[in-house]
Image (cartoon, rainbow, N blue to C red):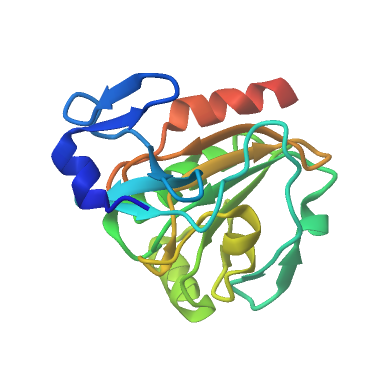
Length: 207
């Protein structure tokens, strides 16, 4: 695969087959598709402090079914995919709940959750259960379910894990009661917040 530094130095990603180029200086927060010239594989990457980080695989898209995974609540209770079925859900994914942007993201969805009693709100990171419990107690977050993916079951099942960062990426998924994805956002830069308005607008179809 071409080194990320080479792509950034070139200032463009070039797909010869489509003769299409995107100037990274103009579109700084683009999700990068790095080309593996030997295998023809596209690796989805996001930016963090101007460094490109590759996801472990291709992330889920609209129309896909939520895969099987297990996470743990702050009370160390196991939560599986099947436990989410039967009710729409908004899944807020983040790298580290105990950092500024992740804290803001979780607090904002916590503030909105009680306005959508028919929707489950989950916040997922691979922080430990103890770390998440401590953060929730400190922040007074009670309207959504914060879950730990310390075992990376969710991260690998959804391909939202960033191996070179040791965390999940920042993303939002909205799924219907049957577990089908109806909205998603992979935030192109980890230092940026997700699009709250678009995510909440996606919940209107369940009213």
